[in-house]
Amino acid sequence: MTSQLPASLSYFRHGMIGATGWSSCHSSLWPRLLWIIWVWISPGSSAHQGTQPHSIKIEGDITLGGLFPVHSKGPPGIPCGEIKKEKGIHRMEAMLYALDQINSDPDLLPNITLGARILDTCSRDTYALEQSLTFVQALIQKDTSDVRCSNGEPPIIRKPERVVGVIGASASSVSIMVANVLRLFEIPQISYASTAPELSDNNRYDFFSRVVPPDSYQAQAMVDIVKAMGWNYVSTLASEGNYGESGVDAFIQISREAGGLCIAQSLKIPREPKPGEFDKIIKRLMETSNARGVIIFANEDDIIRVLEAAKKANLTGHFLFVGSDSWGAKSSPILDQEDVAEGAVTILPKRASIEGFDQYFTTRSLENNRRNIWFAEFWEDDFRCKLTRPGIKLDSEKKKCTGEERISRDSQYEQEGKVQFVIDAVYAMAHALHSMHLDLCPGSMGVCEKMDPWRADSCSTTSAPSTSTAAREPGSFSMRTETLQDATTSSSTSCPIPPPQATGSSANGPTTYDSM
Image 1 (cartoon, rainbow, N blue to C red):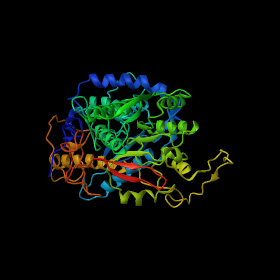
Image 2: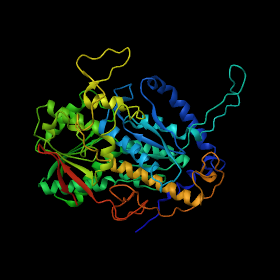
Image 3: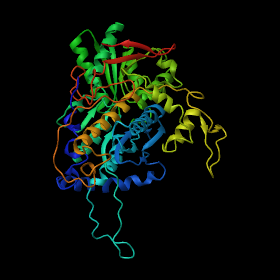
Image 4: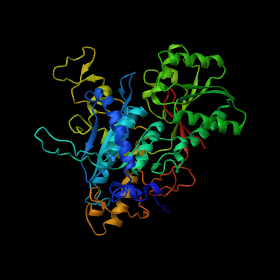
C-alpha cells in the first residue's frame, strides 16, 4: 500500500526548495513582521549567548533544521538549566545518525548531501521561538542601503543558509509556537514527539506533520489501564500548556464516556512554579488521600519535582502514578528516587529499538564526536566526572574524566523511547526531497538549478509522488497527524504505527502492557 505525502510535504509545497516562496512569489508583509520580531527579541538574548553554545551546524547541499530540548529550563532569568541526557542528547544524536545514514546511501538523494542547523530549545517555548527565528533569517529582507563600513564601502553580508524543513520540536507547546512562525514562510515541520490533539488541525497547522499519535490515544490507554486495575477514584495532574492540559482533558472526557470513574481532583502545575509549589501540590493531593492513583500528563522536569516532593513528604509507596509518554521509558525522571516511583505505569508509543543507533551512540567519544558541541557536557554528566579546562580549577569532589570512558561500559545506557521517531522524521523529509529531485531534476546528479534555494524562480507546485520505504531498520513507518486507522499522511506505508504501549516501572525492571 502506498499513499502520498500530506499537502504540507507535497514537495513541501511551494514554500520549500525550488519555489518563489523564497523570492518574488512571497508577500513582503511577513518578512517585515518577522524582522520586527527578530530585532525586538535579539537584544534581550545577548546576555546568555556567550555562555551557552548556540547551535550545531553541519555543511550540506541542503540544510534541515532541528529543535531538541538539550537542556532543561533554567531558573528565573536564565533560559537554560541542566543537560538532558536522554530526551535531549539521545534524540539529537538520532538526527545526526539519520543524516549520516542518508548521506551514505547511494540510492537516496544520490550526490546530494544533507546538512543541518540544530538548536537547543532549553525546554522553554518562548526561548525556542527566539531560536527558531534562525531558520527564517535567510528569508527576511534586510535593508542595508544606508549601511556603510568605516572606510565608506558597503558591507559584505554573508547570506545565512536556507533551512528547507525542520525536525522537531519535542514539547507540544514548543511545536505550536514554532509552527506559527514557520508556516508564515511555508517551511515544513515534522515533529518526533509532539502529541497535543490541537496539532491535528490542518487548517491552523498546515505545514506541520508528526510521526507520533495524538494524546487521545494515550488517554484511552490510561483509561483502559485504570479500569484494568479496578480503580474508580483518581486524581489528575497536568503541566500548564497544550500538552498537559489537553492530555488531561482527553482523559477526563474518555473516562466520562466510559463511566464508572470519578475524578477526585484535577490539578495544574504552573508554567513557572514558585518555590514550594510542588510541596503544595502534594499537600493538595493528600486532601483526597483515598485517590491514590494519579494520572500525570507533565513534562519531564515537572515529573522529577513531583516525585521529589512526594519523597520529601514521606509518602513513598502512597501514590500510584500513571504517566504519559513524556515519562515513558526514561530513567532520568526516577534517578535516585526509584522507591517513590515504584509501581508507576507509563505510556509510550509502541516502538522498535534501533540497533544501528545503539552501535553508533555507544562508540561516540570526545575525540570522534566533536561536531556535537554539547557532548563534553553530556560526558561529564554521564560519567559523573569533570573535564580539565585551562584556567579552571578541578572540583575536588568530582573525579577527573580520562576521556577513555565508554558509554554503556562505564555508564548505564538504554535507548531513549523517541529515537526511532526522530529517525523516521528525518527519513520522511529526505524521501520528500528525493521525490522532488526525481521530478525537478530528471537525469541530473546533485542539486539542479530548480532545486537550488538561492536560484529558484518558479512558482509552480507539483503533487508529490509516493515515496519508498526508508532504507533502515526496523523497516517501514507511517507518518500521520490524525488517526491510527487512517494513515493518510504517510511518506511510506506498509502498516500504520501500532496503538500506544504502556510500560510499567517496578523494582524488577519494566513491564509491558498491551493498552488497546
